[in-house]
Image (cartoon, rainbow, N blue to C red; front, side, top):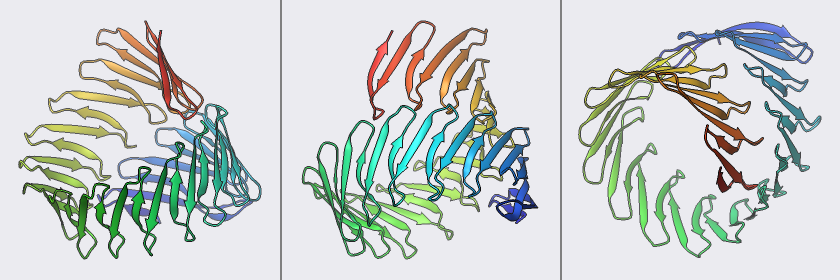
Length: 397
């Protein structure tokens, strides 16, 4: 394949080269570009088991793999490296060192199910698996909370016991579809299915029913709620939703382009919103019912770089080498700048006024990425979490 096009007409082009290495020989992509200007060059070094990808902005990333074609290292465009360690025979991921130096470790049983996950904070999540159905029988989170599951002779989940020892039970029909759910309080919910496996009726614990109806093409055409209010749905020949008739008789209309993307919406009040899209399906403009227009500008790599609102005011956006938002420039000249750590979490936000004054917020995070503190010029707020990532305490200093 040297060319394919999206439904909107955008062309994607590929160049190929023949490569022979110690592990295999094959045609490989050496170049790729699009009609909108996105460009990539791929340099293969099979002897070193290494791939270098360079885009049209000069950014470079590297991929390294072993003799079994398993990725062992990845270096991103900022030079940050993530490494992976694999077992020799089973080809299971044993460990990972993230770009911040955090180490993850994984343990498996004899059937290749993961039984322990060790994160950079030393926390451990555990699981035990059913020997036949290969589904979890017991799961224990890092805080010691456990869930137990029971299965029938067909592998259907029969019951779940949560950390509070509350039981939820399930019953099935001969097709393996859930027909009854009994909650911890003894309340029952009932489900009825059609021959295509679509939900037809749901009865809740109070006996109230909701029903769904479908056409011969399995499309939803009507939904009737517990108060007998019906909503109806209409489609075009391509299966795109075109009409929703509400219970009170009002109508919502949708219009799609040839690629099935929404381009026009008519509200129950008759108000029309329109969207204009480019060849890649990205929204270029939105015009509301009053004729006010919002415009969106993108670079060749799909990053939003300008937004012009209904009043003609423009916002500009700058991105860093990893495509993260680095700066927003508002119509009044005020700016917000963002900095990130190696795990792509925001660590600093700097607000700059139109006259140059700055307000700086620093965000501290632990090895798992959780927010642990926020600092401003005059205050510090600390956040304490438990082993299950639940927020326990907020301290202000």
